[in-house]
Image 1 (spheres, rainbow, N blue to C red):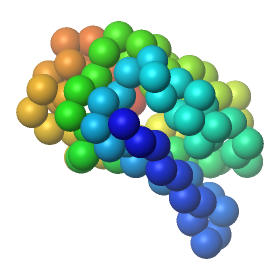
Image 2 (image 1 turned 180 degrees about the vertical axis):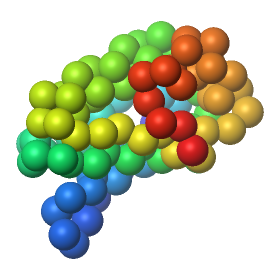
Image 3 (image 1 turned 90 degrees about the vertical axis):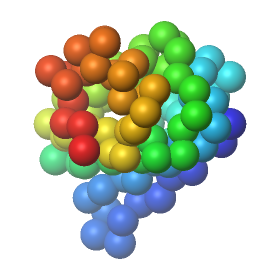
Image 4 (image 1 turned 135 degrees about the horizontal axis):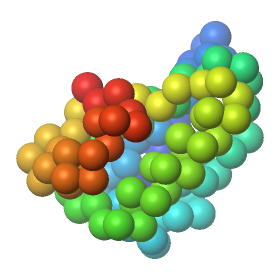
Length: 101
């Protein structure tokens, strides 16, 4: 499990990439990846392309990120989810809460 984050050069997009397992063990790293970014209109892109496993705590962390983004009139986009990860997001009806690419 690892969480990587990078702020775009224009400071408007926070890119978060999750590799391996996305579960409670990366809760602190995930929160640190976004919590200091609350600029109005901030875009948070979560790249799930290298995520191999996701559990219910990961879904909760994504909802907390959405709550954070909503507080600054921002947006969360979930990117490159495939296979089992996409199925989990669909079963949780996350398509209603998030843009999924």
